[in-house]
Image (cartoon, rainbow, N blue to C red):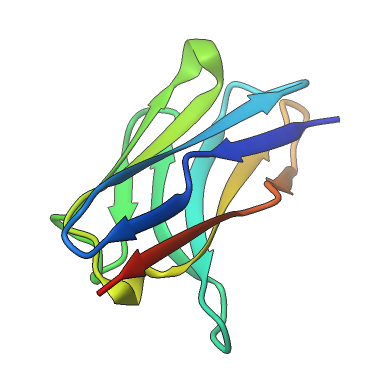
Length: 120
């Protein structure tokens, strides 16, 4: 079984920064994609950023140039550096791990979420 534990959320003023971390434990297959999603009240969960095992990244248009996703494969940890935060970034942020099984097929795991609140 895989467990994802997020940390780093909190309250910050507009223009400030936060760094989220998501540590994975358990059986982690080598081919995987790590991602950060967020869900604001009354809105659907949306992709914020993702990064593949090879380091290819993808970002939502709303965070390009402000957020940076990175990963440390040795620590099975993914990070989200969030700069120039604004109140529209307020949401619960979730970590996701999508893995390709060596024998075929895929599987997804989600963290419990961490609250990010940006005050104006």
